[in-house]
Length: 149
Image (cartoon, rainbow, N blue to C red; front, side):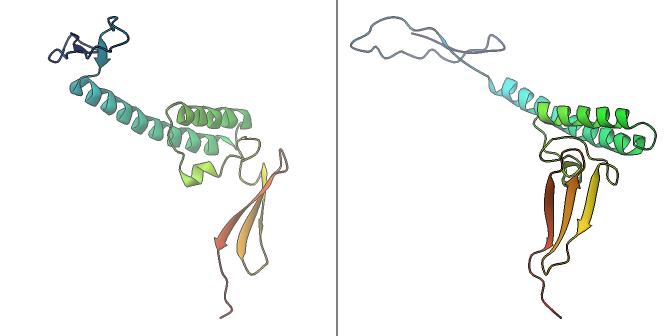
């Protein structure tokens, strides 16, 4: 006979009778699980941590964009720290923040200094962004189909 115990406290459910296998009659260790109260508190702690991380990432990116004029090195460090926080807590970056990082070299792109932005002149309206650090070019399509008026 074995009991199921919570990993975090001494709460245990009613004993569960182990079914004995015919070939193997050795005793098995107790089975552990997490009680509902501990699971909910863990879930809430993760949700609160993610909310705090989202706020900190926004603050760090805003500070990095303001610090660009004064000291680029500090701006890059703040952007790197913001990305590290987002990766550590598995927080998805906002659309505006994601496009401040190069998709190839993963470096922080200072708009106007570390990137070249060109508007496409074809029927499909798009913007070409070129990273001046690694030379990678990627496109943002603005309108999928352009019709003559």
